[in-house]
Length: 595
Image: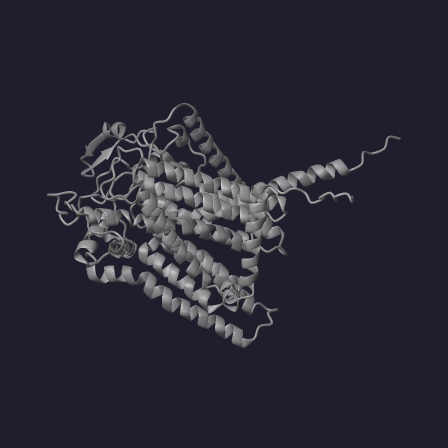
């Protein structure tokens, strides 16, 4: 009887069999889609991102109604805050943890298959950071004054009241130079519009009481309350896309390897980027528009297309219309245009006259879009209401010093604007102002006819870079923490101070290289320098013109994230490379022979 042949095929576990089956189905679908003319054209089109972003917005709607929407009020006393309930809060944390684990496993799998690179790590960081930002949308809901700036919930004069007026009356309110109504109202209009749009999805509650009766806001009922909370969908949308475009800018300026990873960590995991969309004002939207404008300008640098330069103009104009200080983004954009101009007109440029003419037509299109769009609101406010261009509400406009006043003669220009780290780091780990101590030193000055106080060191932060770093990490809040949590907070502060030193060293090093290594491509340095010099000057001038503690918040100088990230990461990687090269040269140099 013939012997039965042994089965030499290795046994496959049920789990592996399922995974192989899924992989086979995926590869089959992939091959079918790859030969589809529509799918091939779609993947090559830049307009596909519009579809992606729209699908992402739909996904955010789904997340909101799964985890956050509540037919009723949210309370700051509940540990789940702006989530639907405690179960939804825990469920989100579990789902987010699974996403983090999934991203880590995906990166490990890519590494094992030699397909891992810095861009994939950077995109994973964006995904994880976006999940944290969405978590903050539940921790900082809209119908509360907590963690807001100039918000003024249920009383007149703040950002919330502007949204109320637009939503209830359907018109843009007039300018008032004595409160937040002086602001451009693009963000407020979009929030009110989002509330009306979401009426499609949120029905009128069976019981619809007035939320704050007898306050002058009698048309803010429970339905308006719920609709306003739903605007968190859009705050998350442009907040997370800001993280994405910050990362894409780092890719566009050709950061690679560890430089890209370190810079992405700085630009996606510094906490103010999670706080900013929920400050209850126009800062985050203006910053988003400015970042997208810079992204399209960098795309124009790669290939000068009309779509890119018009997109640059549209987003820069929208940013300036939202908040005029977004004009700081115009400086790196102008640098890109100037370098393009130089490449067309330098002596050895073999460029056809048609190409030069096309460039000037592109600049004309840019100007025709950006100036009316960006300056239209400011000029209208000036002509209709007499608001000066670039006007900012002055806390000390009456002549009296506020409790937040920073006296330049007490601290000096160096300590106020240049020293890093300055002495006010020793006052407190968190942003620091002691209003009670300041209040005891207030007096009426008969010579000036105004209220003054005797400035006392140790009562408030005075250095702009101290304030930028502290508010970038902790917002404008002082937390009562102890033990290991306090240790971690100190460690984070120290880590960012060290990173600040790396940026200072980078400024010196790359400034020297700019003049000593003329054959290198210095665009990265010039791009970073253009942003740093203009934004830091604007930040310092703003703090000098309005010498109060709150004017030093990092939200007034968010574009500094780009030069800080690029300079700091470049110095770290180049420094390590220099040390390793020096050590290897020393190790390979033979010892001199003894005679």
